[in-house]
Amino acid sequence: DQQVKQNSPSLSVQEGRISILNCDYTNSMFDYFLWYKKYPAEGPTFLISISSIKDKNEDGRFTVFLNKSAKHLSLHIVPSQPGDSAVYFCAASNTGNQFYFGTGTSLTVIP
Amino acid sequence: SAVISQKPSRDICQRGTSLTIQCQVDSQVTMMFWYRQQPGQSLTLIATANQGSEATYESGFVIDKFPISRPNLTFSTLTVSNMSPEDSSIYLCSVETGGSGNTIYFGEGSWLTVV
Figure 1 (cartoon, helix red, strand yellow):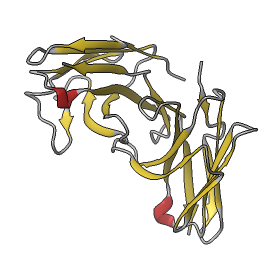
Figure 2 (cartoon, chains in turn blue, orange; figure 1 turned 120 degrees about the vertical axis):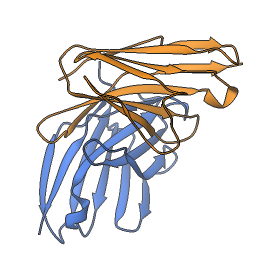
Figure 3 (cartoon, chains in turn yellow, orange; figure 1 turned 180 degrees about the vertical axis):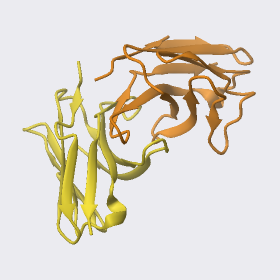
């Protein structure tokens, strides 16, 4: 059973607008979350993380929001750029050691 | 969708030995990927395994240390050879589906501890 879910397989956004990628999880014990960016057939690139003691973490154009009561996190990219077009997947952990992964959302930023 | 089964899920290995991890997918996929996730660190791609050809290794990983087999479209193995404590890690296999590889599935991982 998938413990981490990304229910939107794809998303298209106009350049300069905000991209919002969503991730839901089922295990309330998860306390650390990551977002990765990935191009097909390449290794993933770590983007941003958040621990459960926070509800927001910001790094440049990337902000991750965590809603523990809803077991939901989201990644905001603003402004979106064509180079942001990639697959984004989230990961969650309850120990910092083993992670559970979402299946990804393919983001297309339209110039 | 794709369901991935990995074996073993956990093992404790003696220094200098080798262990083979198996990855079985419930559907045919062209490319399978092997990753390492060391404690507290993010994912690192080890190699890409295509059926019928040699695996492609990322920088820092070599075939002698991590030989890979890909005998058919649903199965792959990764061997961690001559293990040292630095090889203690979670090893994950992954597949991508969809026309542009935009859906990613991971196995639950094989957690190896080398003593």
